[in-house]
Length: 469
Image (cartoon, rainbow, N blue to C red):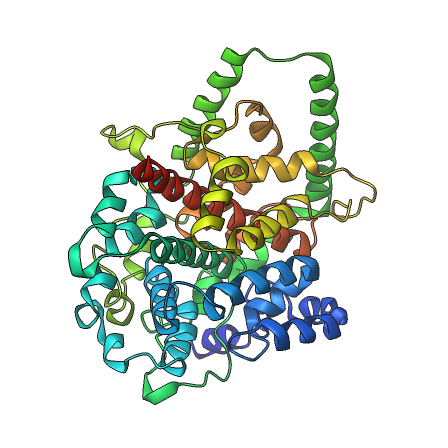
């Protein structure tokens, strides 16, 4: 037994910024260190190179967009006072029990003059902040339920009301931090080593075992089996097969157009199927029931949320409410969301737009060991699959491609990271695209994070627009 314990502690992957990515890979990639350091000096709110930034610096161009928009939300002129911004970040992160982000913003909340008493929990905060609970919960787990009534309630509550600019600022922060929690869990971000704890607020640890234990499925001994047993041959052929499917889809696309009706059917099928990914799925003999008992929410996290049991819902299985389809062309980011945001909270629209475009178009034209590959099709499938799980459909997209390009273990990973990020494990991360570089998997996480943020914003902004009209 003692022996086991020693192995567990000396697990090499848990040093460095990520429990999933070997430290040397992140460090090697940080050869663009000067650029990264400049960005951190310029835009970091914590004033240090934290683990998220280190992992994101595998993609410096993106990192710059990310840091600029985050800095703007937290530090620059905007409708909300600084401590409010950090408290909202804490409320958002708490929906996914993301102690990493909670700790970071507890610290910043105090540094920007926040009232320490608020950190005792929601019953200590002003009513207007409490009023954000409902929209925080819906945005995080079932954004399709947000209606103009929710907006009206917030904007018209007498002395505790929110102005529309304040509400837009709050919504942008909530969506940003829900999505960032997906990135933190999806990339196995480790707790910071030397957290500067302000005013003796202690660090939150998730139910007494280290977060890296969770990342390793508490079972390091078996971890090596899941990867290496398949042998390189298998994962190489997996890569070749994916390349082959991309080529075939490209050719088919040039040959025949599917009818509108057929396209619609394919979307509905994919949407329905996405509901059964993960749920009830014993992933590698890893039943969720046993997992959920581990995930008892610590009181430290739960003090920042109401209704902790509320999560992403597999509505099809419960059969009560159907996820309505949101036709993307009826309310797009480009034509509707962007201008509304920019009108009510100036400049953030441009910054978010740049960040969405950046991640969507980011490519090095490589796939694992292959050069000169056009990965547009793959990036689009990842982005659209996330939107599909939130009921958003693009008329001009053939959802048959999602099925062809994203194998099951990748779908399980995407759904977990996007909908229940706190359940992501190293095993899930390792199980897809075994030939790909870690930087490519981080790129996947950036896409998932931005697709999720955009989906949440579309629902919230559509509701605000309806309230205005």
